[in-house]
Length: 298
Ligand SMILES: [Fe+2]
Image (cartoon, rainbow, N blue to C red; front, side, top):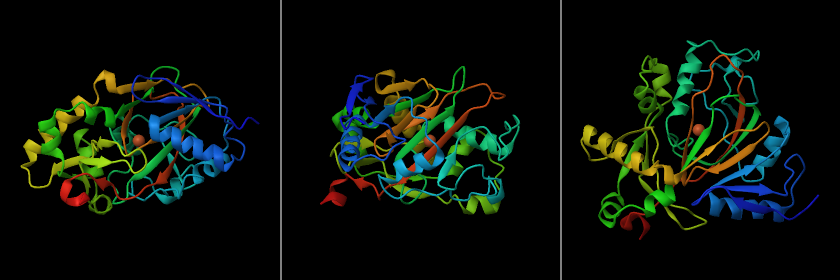
C-alpha cells in the first residue's frame, strides 16, 4: 500500500480530499501524523471509497484518541441501540434496520442535526474529530454542509472581534430542540441535558488559528439579556454560514468524512423520510476549549 497521502483542496478556504489511504487497513504512525497535519490545515477531510466495517471504523478512529460513547439522553433507550455504543447512529433506522416512521420521536429529535452545530458542544468536554461513514446514502438531498469557523472569525471586523473575545455561552440540547418546537422533554431527559458553558471564541491547539465556536445548542450568553443574546448569536451564525465559508458534501456510498469540531460547524440537509439512509459516526473526544479572552489566556 502506498504510504504517501496527497490532499486536493475541494473549497477555497477549507476541505481537502485525501488520496492514498486505505482506511480498512492499519495505518502507519506517519500516515496518521499526515492526516492530523492535513485536518489541522483543512478542518474537513474527505476519503472516498472506504468500505469500512464497524470494527475498521472504530480502529481507525481510535488512532486519534479516546472515543465518545453514546451518552444516554433517554431519547433512545439502551435496548434500542442498533450499533456499538461508540457509534452515534445518525441513520433513520431502528435496531431492526427498519426506517423510522415520520412521527417517530427519535427521528423528530434527530432533526436537530439539520441545524448548524458542532458535535457535543453541549458536553463539558466537547468533541474533537467526528468521522462519518456513508454506508447507504440518500439518492436525493442529504448533503452534509460544513462551515469554516476560522475563516468566518477572520472576516469579522475588529470591533466585533474585541466585543466577543471574552464572551461565554451556554449550550444545551434543550435549546436546539426548542428551536424546532421539540419541547415535550421529560424532566429525566432534561436532567441529562443541563447547559454547559463554552467560550464563544476559541483557539485551535495545533494550528493556533482563532475560531468562532457557534452551535444551535447556544441558548444564552452569560451576562446578556436572553433576547439580545439570541439575536446576536443568530447574526453571527448568519455571517459564519455565508456561502463563501460553506462546503456542501454530496455523499457517495462509502465516503468517510472526518471533521474537526473545534473549528467547523455542520448540518445535514433534508432527504426523503421513507428512504434508508445509513450513516455511522464515531467521535473522538476532545479537550476543554482554549479561550482567547486575554484574561483567560494570560
Ligand atoms: Fe453533528
